Length: 373
Image 1 (cartoon, rainbow, N blue to C red):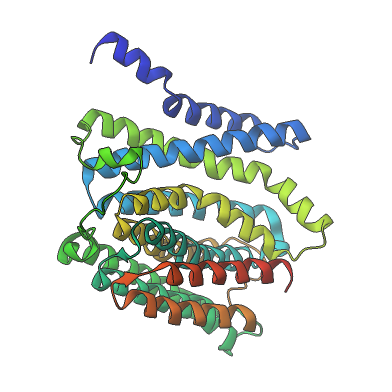
Image 2: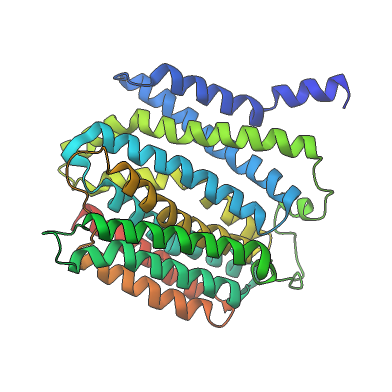
């Protein structure tokens, strides 16, 4: 690499923005920010999201699918879990339902928002979005099982009053979640990797899908470039979650002043944290790689439950106060409807604008009912 090329790489926005966002995180950590400070941190957060998407795509192009989507999903979820545990440790009893609200929001955003947007965008350009039903169906079954075990059963168990697990039940849910997550990753990356590879379809006549199309045919980045992007991806994701925590007091204050339910805080946190995956999934769908979009969506939902529940179970050893995991009747209905609709969407291996629109409306219904229960 020449000196000029190295200098341009060091001044590229995808290199500078994550570092600036990380500096903003360090300067704002544990402080009450004025209005201007909140705006600046929010701008850094938005820039870090865009940088994270770029570096995730570089890493994905180097390692190939489905490893690329797995890298982004796991990285985001690990840091999301750290954010949830940190907020619960600082918040006391008022954050008893934060893990449930954030995880359920992540499931609804990924299974309806990311899936719906990806299908809609691709079908809008190509009439039909094509994907692999074997891989997507297996992922959906895993999401459904994890969601019911961790978020539905606590409402009906009788060992403890309220929507809580007993210590033994929480331990079982944590072990089962971790085991299912590990099994899914093994199937996705080793035993049945071909089920999760993008389906090659004939490109329709007309203009290309966008400037990113050429990237699919470009030579993979060098190992050094991929390693740098991996490091910057982690920095960007830490900045995204940390800056989200920095602005969370303002979010909580705004939610309280608006008279909205406290669950809205978990929804907003999930929306912020999942922005990198949403943008990456939509861009992949524009290029005709709908399977990559579904890998990101369902992989994120699986990781969100499969890693959060064990982490919360471990953290409950020192966290004081109750741990509310069980969903209410309205959210259980929305979860059941999401699972049924998703199964009907995935089974044919092809989807149109209608399926994408149905999922988007389901997400809209969830967001509306979160604000107006």
